[in-house]
Image 1 (cartoon, rainbow, N blue to C red):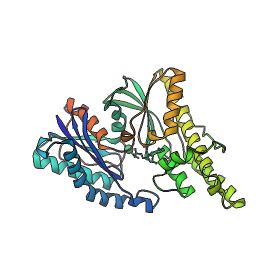
Image 2: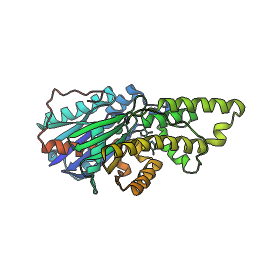
Image 3: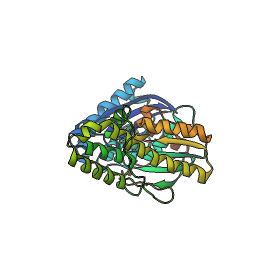
Image 4: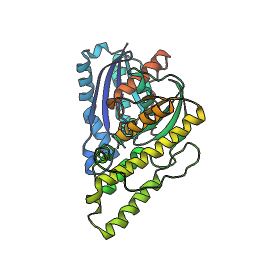
Length: 330
Ligand code: KG4
Ligand code: ZN
């Protein structure tokens, strides 16, 4: 079965071609214009998707070595995400399928981040725990099966990716700041202590961390206007370390509570080198089997939409042409 998958939930326009579970191509157009504003501007993102979508689909088809006529199913991200961005991908997918009389499959973006683990070996065994950390969401998910996922912990305010991005804004770094902080932190030392929020159960909170970083910087800039410049790599290393320990401590608690030792991470922040290292180390010490996605499947990509759609295809879960995008988690 040859499947075209489309992802357009935020600021990346991505198209992939899969033959069953094999990714034949996975092409993404990143939108750099948002760097000017220090965050994604929804209306700008929608317009960029409109410009990018046709060329990126054509590129994915070409690189897969197939023709349009070979495509048998069209899959797309229905949500959650920015409604205008989603609308472009959903409308394109529906129109493409309607013109060629093809079935369509809608995919939940966050479930797709998790199912990206099924693109390559080794694949996690059910049930497993997945820490899904992206720009918009932070969840611990108990994955019973590829169509049965239970959120057992989540953020009460900001997402982990947002914590990186908002810190970057305070430090005057570009957007998205996660990869920039990751890189700067590699030459820094953890010398500043930021508080770990005491949130019950398996939930997270990152807004307090953001506020403490803001006051920490204000306080130090009053006495030394060059404080950020002189301490940038150490600030990055310290903030990153705190975000990672907040995430890992909840994951450790989730593993203890559920008795599950198959542990995965997913989403844009799973590209973070400190988080990847920490998961690997904890896993070795605690006897977990850990699953860390390839970099290309961490941040938003259409291959993960394709693999999630493949499992829906096997179950016969097709959408109708009346399907509409949804901004909220569903
Ligand atoms: O999953 P994703 O591509 O998009 C959403 O679904 O939100 O995640 C984007 C987020 C951004 O907040 C970005 O700063 C963060 O992932 N990110 C990282 C790294 N690479 C991307 N955060 C920390 N370290 C990284 N290396
Ligand atoms: Zn995402």
